[in-house]
Length: 136
Image 1 (tube, rainbow, N blue to C red):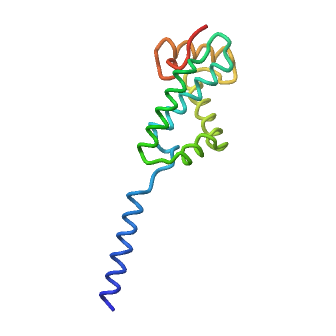
Image 2 (tube, helix red, strand yellow):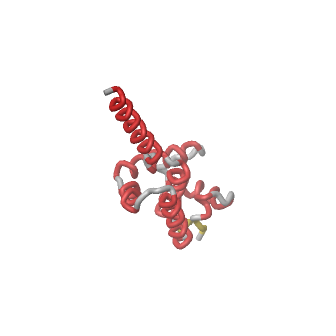
Image 3 (cartoon, one colour):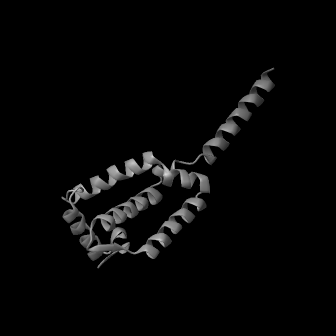
């Protein structure tokens, strides 16, 4: 009886360790994906609101594809990636993060002029946001 109990405990531990090793964090908790998605979201917002700045569409698509490939190399499926990108909850969370970023620069995220100011500053410093944009 003791041997069966020991074997059951060992099996449970092995299964538990296997699960712990194979468990992945939510994509929102993977900074190299989530932070870069934030930069894309901010660049899109700036290009949508600021007539002086337009998106570098091909560069943006290539960047998004590289993020998808990075997530896939970490073991995330197309379905998991799609769920993250399409989630209304994630979009709302990203909006809050984006507004906080704009505010951290001393600007108002609801003010088009401030978004233009941010866009030009990001372009000038060649940040990840800036490389996704170009002045008209």
